[in-house]
Every structure is written in C-alpha cells, then in structure tokens.
Length: 273
Image 1 (cartoon, one colour):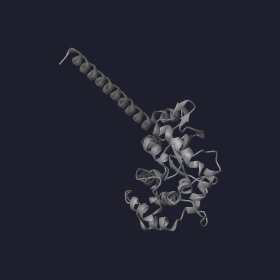
Image 2 (image 1 turned 30 degrees about the horizontal axis):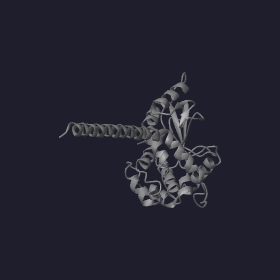
Image 3 (image 1 turned 135 degrees about the vertical axis):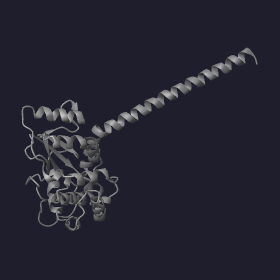
Image 4 (image 1 turned 90 degrees about the horizontal axis):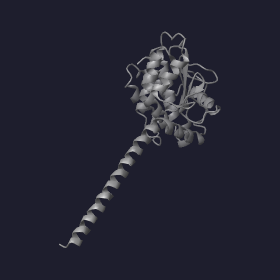
C-alpha cells in the first residue's frame, strides 16, 4: 500500500472517530435535556398543562338534585374538604381535578411533604374539587371520582382514598373513573372503605351537586387551571415570588409563615389511613 493510501485511510478513520465523538456528545446532551424536562415537568410543565386544560372548560354535566355536602365539609361559597389539624396556624388550599395529569404530578411530588406537615400540626389542607377535564375532554370521570372521594370523606377515609385515586389515575383521554365499579374497586385498597354505605353513595351520586357547586366556585375564580395551590391565600404553584415550588421550599414557606405561632393539635378524621 502506498504512503498516500495509508495517509488517506488514517484521515478517514480520524474523520469517522470525530463524527462518532460528535454523535456521542449530541446523545449526551439529548439525555440531559430529557432528564431536565422531566424534572421541570413535575413543577413548571404541570402548571402549563393546567392552564391549557382550563382554557376549554365547559359545563361538566347536567345539574343534579339538592346539594348534599359530605361530612365535615367547609365553605359555603368555596366548598372544601378539610384535612389535618383544624387549629393549624397555616392553610394550604388545593384546587384539583382527579382526571388532571398535572394534578397527579403535583400530588406525587408533594404528597409526603403535605402529610408530614399535617402530622406536625403545621398546616391544615383544604381540597377543592373541580371537574374541568370532563368539560374539556368529555365524559364524567372527574365528577364521578370527586363524588366518590366525598363519599370516602363521609367514612373518614378521604385522604387515603384521594391518594389511591391519584396513584391509579388513568390517561387523561381514558375516562375510566366514569365507571362507578372502577371507583369501588379502588376503594378496596383503603382498609374499611368498601362498605354498603360507600357503594350506595357512589352509585347514587349523593354528592354530585356539591361537587358541581365546588366546580362553579373554581370557574368563577381567577385561577388559570389545575392544580392551583395557595398557602394562606397566596399562590405558591408553580412559584412563590421568584422561588420555584419544591418540597423543600414548601416546608420552608410553611415554617416562615408559622414563625412564632403554635402548631395545631389533633387531626381531623379525614387523615385516617
């Protein structure tokens, strides 16, 4: 082989090696971007999804009968299910929809921190249930799931059932929660919840009108989507001022709000697991 051919082969191999190195670098950058996007997805992207979801909101269902509030519900104009210590110094208000994927992202990221703060008597939480995905996507899964959660509140099992629903949330386009049998099936995951009284409440839509009243409060508010999260009336999702929300920041903000205040005592039955 001539010297020129050898030099040409070496140059070709060098160019091939350089090309491979560039491809590796691009692949590494792509993986970094994917991971970064996933992290942002728990926080910032979730808010974007919520904003988009709210833009097409419509009436989720026909009006049902008289408003029957679940046991222990609060708020005439802004119906809510309270959890945690009634005398906790701070209030976390969460507006959410059981079909909303952004709400599931929020719950999965902050569930443990919220439960810990409640157990410490640092906060009480007010859950406001909305049905905007029913209006956007069609179906009745938001309403049916919210009614079932209100039925669980009657049994003192709201918190564990609420968590089970989000941990088993179907795809947004899959209206699986519209099936009462599915909601009853999931109730079996909460000890002591699957009773004749609970089944009757779910199947009869006992709290449908109460859920619709809660959704109307959401629609008449200035919220842009779900989840909408406030601490003592101040919006903290996806950010509080210049600080992005995170479990650590949520705890810090609660500690700042509670500075010099006495923590709460016994929790409400809704926290029973």
